[in-house]
Length: 304
Length: 283
Image (cartoon, rainbow over all chains, first blue to last red; front, side, top):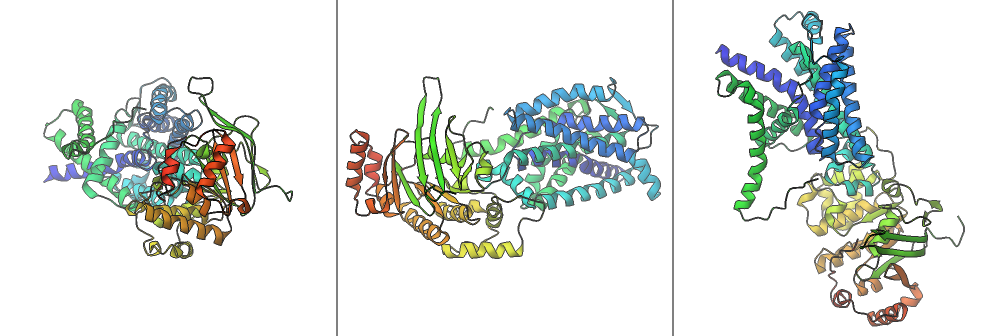
């Protein structure tokens, strides 16, 4: 019984914390149709910025907001490469992801790892404030409140006039321009927000785990994509609110499976990324194979 | 604005694709055109004549070659980006998928259209007042779309989508409406309905209109002015008086006289017998 509770509560916390990454991935891949690979870099950037500020005695809340801001800037850079210099989305993201590796090392003053064990984090401050000592309960409460705030904001934003133009940009860019919408602006906005949310997740997870590592972002896109796909497949969401909730639900399900598999030694921690990659490959291949079996014609995949 | 100046003026507009390559094409060759307020101009020409390129330059999809000018309401908009052109210009495309967003609802599509030329802000895009406006704009179509505001546009038929695109292009009262073979992908009966809807809306809203068509009968029946394009130039420009009693055969003769070539575009000749238009694959 204890095992089950532990598995569920760990997965619940992780579902929310990594759910923010999945929300970011959903915003770019699904809403904007902008396959943004910056995410691996901006997740670590969030962790790095928060950690370096906290060890330099900056208020952890301020450090977390700064991490979000840094993520916004990373997304801004990627989207400007795409909209102003006309570099394809995929390549712009890869370029930023690689550049961010060096930038993150610079942020962490050349160290590849910063420990936060003896530092006061946002979790410690909330723990003091609420008088809750149990770390698991605390992190769940904290993440629930934060996730609800972010979902409410996004749910509102995607229904505003700008948000509507942003969603339409991902679907029919030509139409949006023809109706007087600035698609460069909506793209920049969407990719920036996405990376801001991802960096926020990085900052929180670094504080929760008491460590920021330059490699902590590795595989975040694939994990986020897996969560989005699972959420869509499980819940068949329709409408903005349902989709946002489904993405969080998908992340929880994904983490639960991973935690069960690790707990019973079905997989080793080292194989996790391979398993995740296979999961995404299978999920992406199934629709093609189904169409092929119905003798439907499927166009070749885009290469650029 | 000078009295004899048009609502839209094109001055020395050329467009060359693939410059300095083996595929170099002069799509527009020094076009000068004056479109007057409340003109309903039909534009006809064979494949590659430059009709769609002309609309693309006017809509700001790409700029003309250096020296060319696009002036609307007395304002030079040549070098403004496409979305800035759109504050003056509404457009219905050949493909219904281009003018509407499939995965969004009718009211979301309409909200996007209604904000043409206005700053998009952070207020919720659809509200009661706007829904009433949408109903009012959609009801005259007689398609019942006003009762299906929360339906996804992807579930509508091609004709319904094109009618919706037409309302979306005109709801914010643009100065100029561009219809780019907007009935070409529809079946003959639906094409006729959408054409008639177009005429009704244009006359009711008094919008200056340029309509590209592949069909000579359509070009003669609708509007009050007709231009014929050939190899990137305007070779025939007929006012309402001049084209009043013209037949398709007269148009063919006019073409041959103006271009000095024998008229040999089967797609146009064939399509005269049938209001269904062939898709146009020019740039």
